[in-house]
Image 1 (cartoon, rainbow, N blue to C red):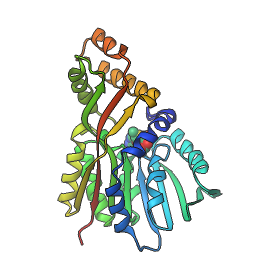
Image 2: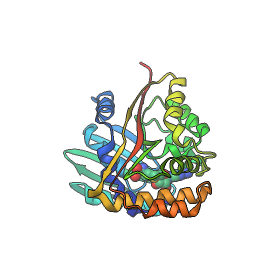
Image 3: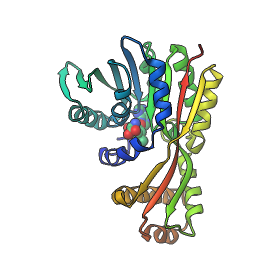
Image 4: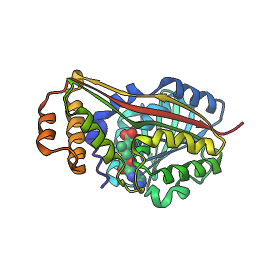
Length: 278
Ligand SMILES: C[S@@+](CC[C@H](N)C(=O)[O-])C[C@H]1O[C@@H](n2cnc3c(N)ncnc32)[C@H](O)[C@@H]1O
Protein backbone atom coordinates (compact mmCIF):
# COMPACT_ATOMS: atom_id res chain seq x y z
CA UNK A 1 0.00 0.00 0.00
CA UNK A 2 2.70 2.52 0.93
CA UNK A 3 5.30 1.57 -1.69
CA UNK A 4 7.81 0.80 1.09
CA UNK A 5 8.34 -2.95 1.30
CA UNK A 6 9.29 -4.68 4.56
CA UNK A 7 12.30 -6.12 2.67
CA UNK A 8 13.60 -2.66 1.70
CA UNK A 9 13.09 -1.29 5.23
CA UNK A 10 14.91 -4.31 6.72
CA UNK A 11 17.79 -3.93 4.28
CA UNK A 12 18.30 -0.25 5.10
CA UNK A 13 17.95 -0.60 8.90
CA UNK A 14 21.66 -1.29 9.64
CA UNK A 15 22.70 1.74 7.54
CA UNK A 16 20.07 3.84 9.35
CA UNK A 17 21.35 2.76 12.76
CA UNK A 18 24.96 3.64 11.84
CA UNK A 19 23.94 7.00 10.39
CA UNK A 20 21.93 8.36 13.36
CA UNK A 21 23.71 11.08 15.26
CA UNK A 22 24.54 9.77 18.77
CA UNK A 23 24.84 13.27 20.24
CA UNK A 24 21.22 14.19 19.48
CA UNK A 25 20.00 10.85 20.79
CA UNK A 26 21.92 11.44 24.03
CA UNK A 27 20.45 14.96 24.29
CA UNK A 28 16.96 13.50 23.87
CA UNK A 29 17.64 10.88 26.56
CA UNK A 30 18.91 13.58 28.93
CA UNK A 31 15.79 15.70 28.31
CA UNK A 32 13.47 12.79 29.15
CA UNK A 33 15.56 11.35 32.02
CA UNK A 34 13.92 11.04 35.43
CA UNK A 35 10.31 10.61 34.23
CA UNK A 36 8.48 7.63 35.74
CA UNK A 37 7.30 6.54 32.33
CA UNK A 38 7.51 7.97 28.85
CA UNK A 39 4.76 8.06 26.24
CA UNK A 40 6.03 8.13 22.66
CA UNK A 41 4.26 8.43 19.29
CA UNK A 42 6.21 7.16 16.26
CA UNK A 43 4.83 8.66 13.03
CA UNK A 44 5.21 6.56 9.85
CA UNK A 45 6.77 3.71 11.83
CA UNK A 46 7.21 1.25 8.96
CA UNK A 47 8.49 -2.01 10.44
CA UNK A 48 9.63 -0.38 13.70
CA UNK A 49 13.23 0.64 12.97
CA UNK A 50 12.85 3.84 15.01
CA UNK A 51 11.67 2.22 18.24
CA UNK A 52 14.45 -0.38 18.02
CA UNK A 53 17.09 2.35 17.76
CA UNK A 54 15.58 4.84 20.22
CA UNK A 55 13.96 2.85 23.05
CA UNK A 56 17.27 1.36 24.34
CA UNK A 57 18.52 4.82 25.42
CA UNK A 58 15.28 6.02 27.03
CA UNK A 59 13.91 5.37 30.54
CA UNK A 60 12.91 2.08 32.21
CA UNK A 61 9.15 2.29 31.47
CA UNK A 62 7.94 3.30 28.01
CA UNK A 63 4.64 3.26 26.13
CA UNK A 64 4.93 3.57 22.38
CA UNK A 65 2.21 4.01 19.76
CA UNK A 66 3.46 3.02 16.32
CA UNK A 67 1.45 4.73 13.57
CA UNK A 68 1.41 3.90 9.88
CA UNK A 69 -1.26 3.73 7.21
CA UNK A 70 0.10 0.50 5.79
CA UNK A 71 -1.32 -2.57 7.59
CA UNK A 72 1.32 -4.85 6.07
CA UNK A 73 4.11 -2.76 7.64
CA UNK A 74 2.32 -2.62 11.00
CA UNK A 75 2.04 -6.41 11.01
CA UNK A 76 5.72 -6.72 10.05
CA UNK A 77 6.61 -4.30 12.88
CA UNK A 78 4.76 -6.44 15.42
CA UNK A 79 6.60 -9.57 14.25
CA UNK A 80 10.01 -7.83 14.15
CA UNK A 81 9.57 -6.47 17.68
CA UNK A 82 8.80 -9.95 19.01
CA UNK A 83 12.14 -11.09 17.57
CA UNK A 84 14.01 -8.00 18.82
CA UNK A 85 12.80 -8.08 22.43
CA UNK A 86 14.39 -10.14 25.20
CA UNK A 87 10.83 -11.12 26.24
CA UNK A 88 7.53 -10.42 24.49
CA UNK A 89 3.87 -11.19 25.09
CA UNK A 90 0.52 -10.27 23.59
CA UNK A 91 -1.42 -7.81 25.73
CA UNK A 92 -4.79 -7.40 23.98
CA UNK A 93 -4.26 -5.03 21.05
CA UNK A 94 -0.79 -4.11 22.29
CA UNK A 95 2.36 -6.09 23.01
CA UNK A 96 4.42 -6.02 26.19
CA UNK A 97 8.18 -6.19 25.70
CA UNK A 98 11.22 -6.45 27.93
CA UNK A 99 14.43 -5.15 26.42
CA UNK A 100 17.70 -4.60 28.31
CA UNK A 101 15.84 -4.08 31.59
CA UNK A 102 13.20 -1.80 30.10
CA UNK A 103 9.46 -2.48 30.15
CA UNK A 104 7.98 -1.33 26.85
CA UNK A 105 4.30 -1.45 25.86
CA UNK A 106 3.73 -1.06 22.13
CA UNK A 107 0.39 -0.21 20.48
CA UNK A 108 -0.15 -0.25 16.74
CA UNK A 109 -2.41 2.28 15.05
CA UNK A 110 -3.39 2.31 11.43
CA UNK A 111 -4.01 5.92 10.43
CA UNK A 112 -3.38 8.27 7.54
CA UNK A 113 -1.37 11.09 9.10
CA UNK A 114 -2.63 13.58 6.54
CA UNK A 115 -6.17 12.98 7.82
CA UNK A 116 -5.60 12.07 11.45
CA UNK A 117 -2.43 13.76 12.67
CA UNK A 118 -4.08 15.71 15.51
CA UNK A 119 -6.03 12.68 16.77
CA UNK A 120 -2.89 10.54 16.65
CA UNK A 121 -0.69 13.03 18.52
CA UNK A 122 -3.23 14.68 20.78
CA UNK A 123 -3.03 12.62 23.92
CA UNK A 124 -0.27 14.30 25.92
CA UNK A 125 2.78 12.36 24.69
CA UNK A 126 6.24 13.11 26.09
CA UNK A 127 7.82 12.57 22.69
CA UNK A 128 6.72 12.62 19.05
CA UNK A 129 9.27 10.95 16.81
CA UNK A 130 9.73 9.73 13.26
CA UNK A 131 12.39 8.27 11.02
CA UNK A 132 12.81 8.84 7.28
CA UNK A 133 9.42 10.51 6.97
CA UNK A 134 9.54 14.27 6.61
CA UNK A 135 11.16 14.54 3.17
CA UNK A 136 7.91 12.92 1.95
CA UNK A 137 5.84 15.67 3.55
CA UNK A 138 4.90 19.17 2.45
CA UNK A 139 6.11 22.30 4.21
CA UNK A 140 2.48 22.94 5.26
CA UNK A 141 2.24 19.49 6.84
CA UNK A 142 5.57 20.00 8.62
CA UNK A 143 4.24 23.27 10.08
CA UNK A 144 1.07 21.44 11.11
CA UNK A 145 3.16 18.81 12.89
CA UNK A 146 5.10 21.53 14.71
CA UNK A 147 1.87 23.28 15.82
CA UNK A 148 0.35 19.98 16.96
CA UNK A 149 3.43 18.81 18.86
CA UNK A 150 3.85 22.25 20.47
CA UNK A 151 0.17 22.17 21.46
CA UNK A 152 0.99 19.09 23.53
CA UNK A 153 4.27 20.51 24.86
CA UNK A 154 6.00 17.32 23.67
CA UNK A 155 9.61 16.87 22.63
CA UNK A 156 10.19 16.19 18.94
CA UNK A 157 12.92 14.01 17.48
CA UNK A 158 13.21 12.94 13.87
CA UNK A 159 16.08 11.23 12.11
CA UNK A 160 17.26 10.52 8.59
CA UNK A 161 15.49 13.30 6.73
CA UNK A 162 17.00 13.32 3.21
CA UNK A 163 18.91 16.54 2.48
CA UNK A 164 19.54 16.27 -1.29
CA UNK A 165 23.25 15.33 -1.28
CA UNK A 166 24.43 12.11 -2.93
CA UNK A 167 27.78 10.76 -4.02
CA UNK A 168 28.40 7.52 -5.84
CA UNK A 169 31.64 5.62 -6.40
CA UNK A 170 32.79 5.21 -9.06
CA UNK A 171 31.50 8.51 -10.38
CA UNK A 172 29.57 8.82 -13.67
CA UNK A 173 29.28 11.85 -15.99
CA UNK A 174 25.49 11.87 -15.43
CA UNK A 175 25.69 11.92 -11.61
CA UNK A 176 24.77 15.61 -11.25
CA UNK A 177 21.85 15.38 -13.71
CA UNK A 178 20.64 12.18 -12.05
CA UNK A 179 20.75 13.74 -8.58
CA UNK A 180 18.96 16.89 -9.78
CA UNK A 181 16.21 14.77 -11.36
CA UNK A 182 15.94 12.56 -8.26
CA UNK A 183 15.62 15.62 -6.06
CA UNK A 184 12.86 16.96 -8.33
CA UNK A 185 11.08 13.62 -7.89
CA UNK A 186 11.47 13.99 -4.12
CA UNK A 187 9.38 17.16 -4.37
CA UNK A 188 6.37 15.47 -5.97
CA UNK A 189 3.25 14.71 -3.93
CA UNK A 190 3.68 11.65 -1.67
CA UNK A 191 0.26 12.03 -0.06
CA UNK A 192 0.91 15.22 1.89
CA UNK A 193 0.85 17.78 -0.96
CA UNK A 194 4.03 18.79 -2.83
CA UNK A 195 6.81 17.30 -0.76
CA UNK A 196 9.52 19.41 0.85
CA UNK A 197 12.07 16.81 -0.36
CA UNK A 198 15.62 18.07 0.30
CA UNK A 199 14.24 21.27 1.89
CA UNK A 200 12.58 19.25 4.69
CA UNK A 201 15.40 19.60 7.29
CA UNK A 202 15.33 23.38 6.97
CA UNK A 203 11.51 23.43 7.04
CA UNK A 204 11.49 21.34 10.24
CA UNK A 205 13.94 23.63 12.01
CA UNK A 206 12.03 26.74 10.97
CA UNK A 207 8.63 25.32 11.90
CA UNK A 208 9.72 24.33 15.42
CA UNK A 209 11.57 27.60 16.00
CA UNK A 210 8.32 29.37 15.07
CA UNK A 211 6.75 27.48 17.99
CA UNK A 212 9.48 28.72 20.35
CA UNK A 213 11.25 25.34 20.43
CA UNK A 214 15.01 24.99 20.80
CA UNK A 215 16.21 23.14 17.71
CA UNK A 216 19.41 21.15 17.30
CA UNK A 217 20.42 19.49 14.05
CA UNK A 218 23.14 17.04 13.07
CA UNK A 219 24.22 15.34 9.86
CA UNK A 220 23.38 11.64 9.62
CA UNK A 221 24.57 10.49 6.19
CA UNK A 222 24.28 6.93 5.01
CA UNK A 223 27.75 5.62 4.27
CA UNK A 224 27.40 2.41 2.31
CA UNK A 225 30.24 0.40 0.84
CA UNK A 226 30.65 -2.83 -1.05
CA UNK A 227 30.16 -4.86 2.13
CA UNK A 228 26.47 -3.99 1.58
CA UNK A 229 26.36 -4.56 -2.16
CA UNK A 230 22.70 -5.62 -2.16
CA UNK A 231 21.71 -2.36 -0.43
CA UNK A 232 23.73 -0.26 -2.89
CA UNK A 233 22.04 -2.02 -5.79
CA UNK A 234 18.54 -1.56 -4.32
CA UNK A 235 19.37 2.10 -3.71
CA UNK A 236 20.67 2.62 -7.26
CA UNK A 237 17.61 0.84 -8.75
CA UNK A 238 15.18 2.96 -6.73
CA UNK A 239 17.11 6.12 -7.54
CA UNK A 240 17.08 5.34 -11.30
CA UNK A 241 13.36 4.44 -11.24
CA UNK A 242 12.53 7.81 -9.64
CA UNK A 243 14.72 9.63 -12.18
CA UNK A 244 12.97 7.77 -15.05
CA UNK A 245 9.55 8.89 -13.73
CA UNK A 246 10.57 12.53 -13.81
CA UNK A 247 11.59 12.25 -17.50
CA UNK A 248 14.44 14.78 -17.49
CA UNK A 249 17.28 12.34 -18.12
CA UNK A 250 17.20 10.30 -21.38
CA UNK A 251 16.46 6.57 -20.82
CA UNK A 252 19.76 5.49 -22.46
CA UNK A 253 21.71 7.70 -20.05
CA UNK A 254 19.80 6.24 -17.10
CA UNK A 255 20.49 2.76 -18.46
CA UNK A 256 24.20 3.47 -18.75
CA UNK A 257 24.32 5.05 -15.28
CA UNK A 258 22.65 1.95 -13.88
CA UNK A 259 25.01 -0.45 -15.69
CA UNK A 260 27.99 0.77 -13.61
CA UNK A 261 28.65 -1.44 -10.59
CA UNK A 262 28.71 0.94 -7.59
CA UNK A 263 31.07 0.16 -4.73
CA UNK A 264 30.12 2.99 -2.39
CA UNK A 265 27.52 5.65 -1.82
CA UNK A 266 26.97 8.51 0.62
CA UNK A 267 23.44 9.86 0.97
CA UNK A 268 22.95 13.02 3.00
CA UNK A 269 20.45 13.12 5.85
CA UNK A 270 19.76 15.35 8.84
CA UNK A 271 18.57 14.47 12.35
CA UNK A 272 16.51 17.07 14.19
CA UNK A 273 15.81 17.43 17.91
CA UNK A 274 13.34 20.13 18.97
CA UNK A 275 12.71 20.69 22.67
CA UNK A 276 9.95 22.80 24.19
CA UNK A 277 10.90 26.13 25.73
CA UNK A 278 11.88 26.04 29.38
C1 LIG B 1 10.60 5.76 4.30
S1 LIG B 1 9.44 4.88 5.22
C2 LIG B 1 10.17 4.95 6.84
C3 LIG B 1 9.67 3.86 7.75
C4 LIG B 1 10.33 3.80 9.13
N1 LIG B 1 10.06 5.00 9.90
C5 LIG B 1 11.82 3.56 9.03
O1 LIG B 1 12.61 4.46 9.33
O2 LIG B 1 12.21 2.45 8.59
C6 LIG B 1 8.06 6.02 5.38
C7 LIG B 1 6.92 5.44 6.17
O3 LIG B 1 5.87 6.42 6.27
C8 LIG B 1 4.63 5.77 6.07
N2 LIG B 1 3.68 6.77 5.55
C9 LIG B 1 3.80 7.48 4.42
N3 LIG B 1 2.73 8.28 4.26
C10 LIG B 1 1.92 8.08 5.33
C11 LIG B 1 0.67 8.60 5.74
N4 LIG B 1 0.02 9.52 5.00
N5 LIG B 1 0.14 8.19 6.91
C12 LIG B 1 0.79 7.25 7.66
N6 LIG B 1 1.97 6.70 7.31
C13 LIG B 1 2.54 7.11 6.16
C14 LIG B 1 4.94 4.66 5.09
O4 LIG B 1 3.97 3.63 5.10
C15 LIG B 1 6.30 4.20 5.57
O5 LIG B 1 6.19 3.22 6.56
